[in-house]
Structures are given as structure tokens and as C-alpha cells.
Length: 262
Image 1 (cartoon, rainbow, N blue to C red):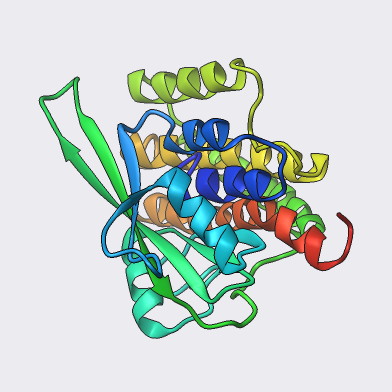
Image 2 (image 1 turned 30 degrees about the horizontal axis):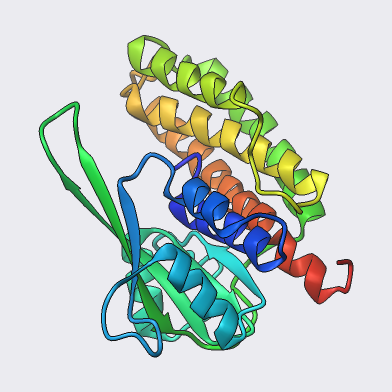
């Protein structure tokens, strides 16, 4: 599970740009992050890939009022509304952005090149038609916060009992990376998001870190088949809950607009 999916950055900073809260240059810089470049392919009216600045401006001109996130997994089309071909591409990428106001969606394709330690990452967002319908299985912020706290408590008890919370260099590197990001100004979400969305996303990211560490450290202290099975059963629902919470947080900007809050 990505602690900060590219679709999350695109939706959050794209929403801030659409609302006039950040400049195009600041939005694009935040969206690209540590990648080399992002382009958008398949935009209506464009014959080839275009840069993010032009793409976001074109989406606004087409009538896009906001951007939502989808983080689907096998058997769980979280945030998607169809059609099947878009859902399939989003599932393959494990993420997508769905436009609010215009029936379009964006699915990233990541290209890596270069030697180890100096990998050059380029991202192409494929713009495709989507079905205008409510996104699948997205909870409210309140529901997400409550479910996440309950799931984290239950999973922590099981993981601690099985000694699989994670330790060693992989776990330490993951924790250090999370702390470093948290200390860089707390830019968890773009300007304009409600404080509750920031709180929910931070908790979801911490849960995602716990899950990643647990998976990356083999079976930890779970040595028997029953213990390994118990660990998997503990992680699966909490991972699903964390993804739902992430989507709820990223989508809070659009949900508030629909309710007339902003």
C-alpha cells in the first residue's frame, strides 16, 4: 500500500488549483513530487501527450469541478463507477482519479529507467471516459475515522501477540521515511481540505506503514501455519479499511462542495 499514492497527490493539489488556492506551478511541483515528469495522454482536443499544467487547465475548461481518488484492489472496486474497461485499467494500476463534473478519469502508467540508485521515473496519465455514477464503497470521513480506529486496535493486538509488528532494517527504514516526511512541514493534504480529512489521512498512512512493514518482514514470529493464517486474516481487513479511509480523506474536498459547505 502506497502511503501517498500518485492519484492522491493529483486529486488533492488539482482540487486546490481548481479552487484557486494554489498556483499552477505549485500544484504541478507537488503532484510530480520526486518523479521526473508527468504527462497526460488522451485529453479531449489533444492529439498527443501534454504536460500537467496544460492538462489541468484543459480539464477546468471542459467543466471539471473537482477530482476524486479510487484505490481499487481485486474484489474491491473502491472509488470506481465504471465502465468495465476503465475499472480494469484502474485495478491494474491500483489507483485512478475520477473527475467530478465531466465523465472522465485518469489512470497512471509508470515508467522507470536508469541504473540502481539513479532511477528516472516518468508517469503518463491516460485520460478515459468514465460512467457518471456514485463511486463504489466510499465511506464518509466520520465513518472512515471510526472504522480505522477500531480496525487498528484489533489488528495491533493480533500482530503484537504473534510478534509480527515488524523489526529490523526494512522496518526501521520505513519508519524513518515516514518520520522524515512528517517533519517536512506536515503537508499531508493540499490547502483547502478540512482538518478532519488531514487527521484521517495521517492515521490511514500510519496504518499503511504498519501493514507494509508486517508484510515486508516475512512471517515475523508467526512460525506455525495457523499463526501465519491469523496474521493474514488480521492484516486483510485493516488494509481494506485503510484504503477506504484514504479515499474518504482525498475525496472530502469534492464531498464538501457537493453538500454546499464551500
